[in-house]
Amino acid sequence: MIEGYVGCESVTVGGELTLHISTDAPRFRLRFYRLGAQLDPVGESDAYPGAVHAPPPHPDGLPGRASPADDWKWPPLTLPVPEGWQPGIHLVEFVECGPGHADDPPLLDAGQLEGHARVFFVVRPRPPGSHARILYKKSTFTRHAYNRSDRPGLERAVSLYDHPVHRPGDGAATHRGHKVSFHRPGGVIDLAYWDAPFIAWLERHGYPVEFCTDLDLHEDPALLSAYDLLLSVGHDEYWSAPMRLQAERFVRGGGNIAFLSANTCWWRVHLTDGDTAFVSDTDHHVGDEYPHLPATDQWWAPSPDGVGRPENSLTGVSFRNGGMWPGTEWPGDRPRVGYTVQHADHWIYEGTGLRDGSDGGTPDRLGAGTPLIGYECDGAAFAYDAAGIAHATGEDGTPESLLILGIHVLEPVHEDFHHFKWGHWNGPVRESTISSPRAATMGLYTAGGTVFTAGTTDWPVVCGHQQDPAVVRVTRNLLDRLRHRAPLPR
Image 1 (cartoon, rainbow, N blue to C red):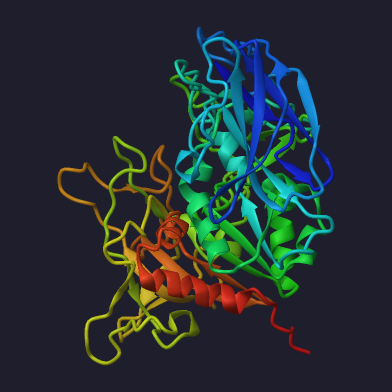
Image 2 (image 1 turned 120 degrees about the vertical axis):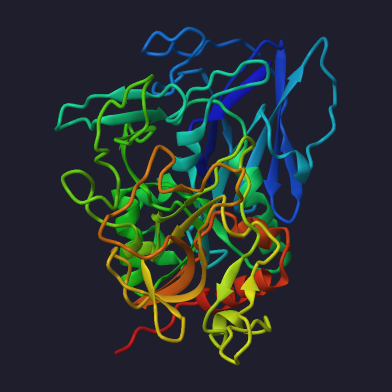
């Protein structure tokens, strides 16, 4: 048994990385890899003595469950980050040594990213923007919300969703809500599914990027000034107010954002414990009870029952106009029909050969035959004009200038699959005043800089695995256009 976590998921070249490791092996080593076009080994440590460290018990006294809210406070092991390392997402593998363990187990490859006894971290350059003008934001707050702190042979199942801990707050110094600590083990899951294929695709196709975590964007108001394009990738559900403020200022100042993600900016989080944990007042139950409803950290819901700042005023779309496909096996079943193409003459579709039906034929579908729509998807309130073209109405907070380039009206997947889940998984979330169908929505708007939204979590999966040539071409068109800021009008 071996498991561990990093003290901070973001380090700079020449800085220090702190690890916290527990093992019943007498010794352990560390293997380091960089995630790019493939998984490249970049270093290996000497052996360190092993020791077992216990997790803190669950505050509610649940037998067999550890605390998702408290720092596990395992002893630190601090190592220098070599000056020669390239910026990127790195992986550290924990290797058990001693009797009963292989002296030199095989190196991991790109197909073995997911699992326990490993953890990822971001290596950033000094200074920011010195290697690339594209910044890839790894959605680490969302990762921590879902981290169950499991390991092989032991399902602790403690997260914001499984046996969560709710803090009442005091209305002043501390916030009310579900609390999640970043200082817990849990291995690698989301990185392998959403990020790894897209990161490999970016590097193979010559798109240099630098990386940051949610915490980097939260803590550094000047971070985005070094870049022209910010990428939000996969599942990017939890945002702090400073993150959102920096992103909005970035766009107003001419910066571009590509949301190749969905369920984006759904919950607001409040950093606590020296920025090593967050609290969010969500609608997740604790036991059989909901500790507090309405959930006041819902971005879109009007104040005082929510934040009162609809996420689609930034992203162009919202999960409440989309939804998810639940299933017995994550990520569940979903349709494979793709987006109905609109405005095929737009630069986003250049070179795809896709048609929009303006020639009298049937519109093509972007991503048809792939799971492009889902596993979660976002949409905008819309209305059809006389020609059957969908236009954003703006009644949900979406900029009225959003140009809908692709749309898929959401319907049940098939008759024996229960029904499509609208809104958040705990129940319907929808303004009664909006009458348009729920629809996954791809589009863009310009407000200083340009904001593109894919409207689906699985865009980077379909592109990264090159499952659809048109999705790949649209992604290249997008990156080629937005990787450089357009001059602001005088």
